[in-house]
Length: 343
Image (cartoon, rainbow, N blue to C red; front, side):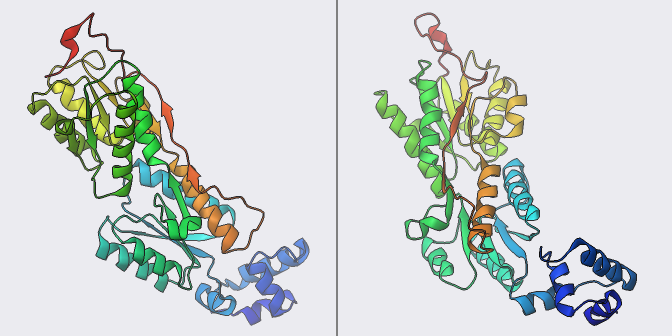
């Protein structure tokens, strides 16, 4: 196997110059770079990344932990992170935590053991105290969709409370007062915040919150299907449903049609996330935009700024949700058609 010494000898340059070429240092002329690359190709030289990281104390790799590896939401997040880091010649190592505390901790320790320069974490089960302590370690961390006041400068989050408020307000403004909700898992902070926003909108419109019309889901299509069935089984009047996310909404819409309900004439539905399939559902789904791809890019930007010392970059820690109005919401006029209420 060829060595870096052989490369430097064949190219007629110093070891330091070969190292600068491998690390994409701009202080090497194009002519010298071409000589080094030609020598590496001729010798079939492959840099030892482990040796490089030990020598430079920098692996040029960033660990990413997400809850799941499937679905549009996490795909968009990972794509945003990877594209931003790849443009800066950094690589990613990805692990999944599955929203379980033990698995999240195990995955974090795995990434630390891979000598990552930083960790980007989308974690749900580990405690704030664990993350605060982790932030005090030698490997920098940045969190996505998690806000912890003590390490707020390391958090890239969405105002989920405002998002829940916007979704519910959109229905209230169309005359709906009998609102059901299929929430996310209420042990999760984002689900609780969206429910709080839902309640704030109801209070603003002087509409009482009906605990019986709240069903807890799981952010998945099956949770939306089960949630809608449970709501219909209650035999309590409602004309609209606020769904935890777009997957939940798609499941709810399917069950509504199975019960011969027309959307949105009989029941209005709104989602959350603005996934790519939301505009392809029938009717096209009104939703709240969750710019998770941009948040992923911002987390990567945080790493480039504070870990790789690109001081010119700007960081936005808090993202704002945006209402996206499509066809799944209709105006309710009970005086014209009182039979629209589902019961």
